[in-house]
Image (cartoon, rainbow, N blue to C red; front, top):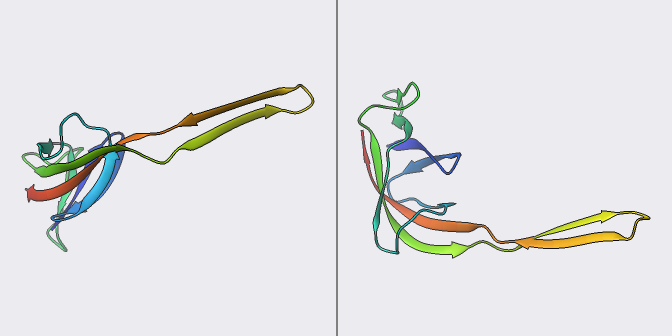
Length: 103
């Protein structure tokens, strides 16, 4: 069984036992997180698609860790003007293990 969930402005296809990195969620390692925005759930022919969400469906997971992704370097330059700007960014993420899908 799999489900399509929406979190952090993105959609993820998950099944039980999956580990994924999503946008930062509040909570410490070991705490439980619940995803209520389930867009589709099912398996094979018996899939339910919500409009926009499946009523009564939710996905439960456990936070494994919080962290920062690798640094992305932003470099801006305007030729012949002597203008350069260098900036870095590290996106915060939460690593989550999916425990249960309730339809």
